[in-house]
Length: 471
Image 1 (cartoon, rainbow, N blue to C red):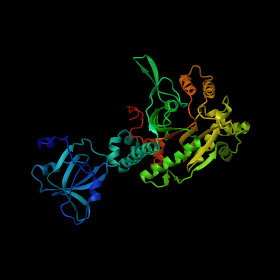
Image 2 (cartoon, helix red, strand yellow):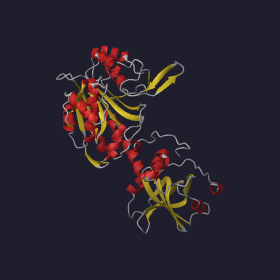
Image 3 (cartoon, one colour):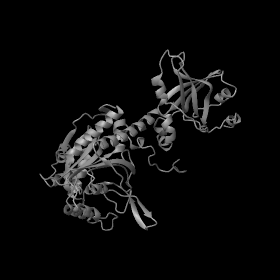
Image 4 (cartoon, rainbow, N blue to C red):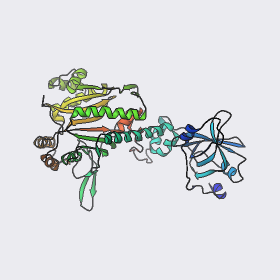
């Protein structure tokens, strides 16, 4: 670095304008047309010094291009070229042409080499493989440029989120923002993160779900709303879970869970089209077929199909639970049934499957079926054995909602979980019949990009801090 400074060059560069993406240069280049030029900037990921010529592979956000440097450059530029290292950031300005091997190259002209930033660490030779997985997550800033497929995955994520936003906005949904710090931890059954507000001297909870606030907006007359939101749940980490995660929640007045099923199919289809992945996507060892329509199957039918148990035969279900090593003592019948369902059914649902009509007792925010009130108008969407979406025909009866909350809180008097009585009061002003939907963005990106762990689709996943013991 000192040698670069000795040439009168700032090793950390300055403003560098009119940069063209390398992919654009490749796309516009015309064979046999003289005088074509390019001006690109990026990181040196390959460098071959063969004496009087130096060939560099330059990588930017869109791809790579070769840069050629010749000893015919000025006495100031050529010494700089000789000081370049892997990982350095440079600007290259010059004419375009092909090498003898046919490689498109920017042949840097006089004054066309600009030093933009010094890389002080030796770049990794290889970042693939199990031994480097933890380091890749911790040093995503290296992973992104060292592994082009990682950059492509996060570009796909950005496009998926943009598509979700465009899709819903085009259908008249308003994008809104609801509180991330809440006085009551509600909207889902999960353990919250707790923080403290000093000025008001009150505990607050990072939201576990935005649902109850979004439905308040339905009461207020916002008939179609959505939020792309960050939720926080103080629970475990695994291939499908990160304590901080992203969801899109959608609410549509005068809809129901069938409307939400159609919306889900259309929305995911739009995302598939946007990233050009096709309807058949490899995910782990499985190939998932996203072609519509997707299967719609009742909870009770799937339980019978995969566990052999009738949903009304609790004796057989408890026997099955014990066979599966599920501790059912003191557990409510519906909870035991759902434990058996999760263990026997979910991992078998490979292609997109809407599981519909859950036991109503498991769904305190969903409307009971008019055909059979024992079941709720609810679906969960499973793909490759993983829950991707959850939706209801929303419960808008304040009396039933109050009783559901009371039942849910029974035996939890010392818990931090409290009844959101203001939400019940909001329902008393009249909430229109509605359908509501939540889709996990992280899991959607996993499925559409073939990433089998959630850490591969979150730029900075939560990791255990490095200490002397686990270094």
